[in-house]
Image (cartoon, each protein chain N blue to C red):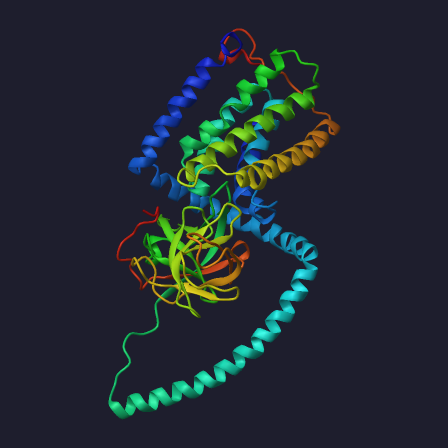
Length: 276
Length: 172
């Protein structure tokens, strides 16, 4: 095309460069350069986040005053219920300990090792929800490890590690798939990220109700069992429908989390991040 | 001096894309700061600035967000040819509207391309248009309009995207 004639060489060069970059990326040649870049960029990214976080929080709060008021009332109620539950669980725990002592049973396992890390960047391009954190292989982080919020809610999985940084694919990424079950009805299915950075619970012909709590089922070996994910916020269709739409509200606001915990004691049995 | 300023602004655009943009979403969309930087670099710095900045921005953004740099380069690539096409079509458009049209067209292309790269299995849905592309374009449009106005007010004048005759080194 005549109009592009003086750009042709540049377009050709850029297409060639793009192909080379894709090739280098695929074989991992770019990873060391990426590590250096991230090491240099982290302080600038942290500084920008520190400047804009308060502004974003302020604007978000202004826009959601009514929601926050309702949420506050709901959380107060939940807090009261949870405190009552904690009291009864403490009593039960004491009884169990006494019974275990009487039967000579030893408790197995221990607390999982967790590495705390700060979120330095967040990629939110279409269909993507990936964060990068300021801890990498130097802190014992490996690909496939589970990432939790500071409150213990599932956030995602480590997908790439450099020396001092790691990338985490959040559960709200459209490529994320997590085997989960409801605590109330034991209905099992797969939680997937949606285009608007929400969660949907795919299951067939099982009972599920609004308000049900979803936790990881541990099936597939990619995640440890019983990690809280969220609550069912809407269900459309009937249990007889082949596919129902179950919307899940994450327990934690993933976009506002600044600190995460990487469970370094859980090594996935099989890593299949792209799903089947 | 000009080169240093471009490098700082380009880096700022990349860092802002992975730190600031996710904090101000509109539905599932965020503005594309690197695209805005490239559009403004082309509009006020001339085509040569954008030709040099495009691969650098794509690679830096790829590193910062763990996206394939090659894919990002292809995503930003149509900006200059589209801008030139619009300019040479001699449509009754001012420099601002030519710049805006090139920005919107490239914005649609890059969002379709980036979404297509991860939504291959799910396929394209109506919500991709309503929750990602349209709000994203609106954000780009709003930011571009504001920044363009500011740059004109401080005395910068819009430049042509046509490369001068005489080859690559004859740009100035």
